[in-house]
Image (tube, rainbow, N blue to C red; front, top):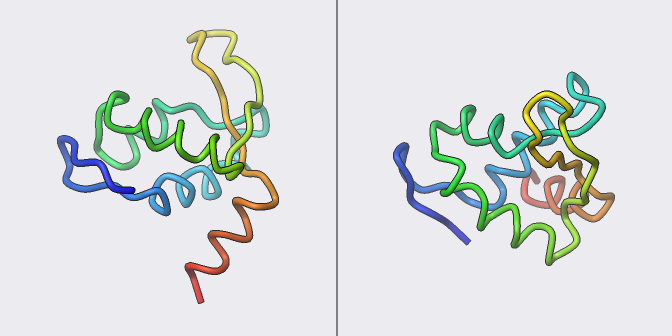
Length: 88
């Protein structure tokens, strides 16, 4: 799945890759806003891709950011395997 926003097309792999990149720095989870900012997209462009990743078991809910109220996500083991397979 790709979605076109302000910065061009964004794929599921793009979104998962950003979550993987920031997980070490954001142990509570990674928010959609951070993913959108990193990919130069709006939250609205990223949200359907996050929803797809959740449906496919590639991301899981990690909590809520206390400051922003934004939901946070982390990769599942399946999400990590999916990224590894696309990197080969």
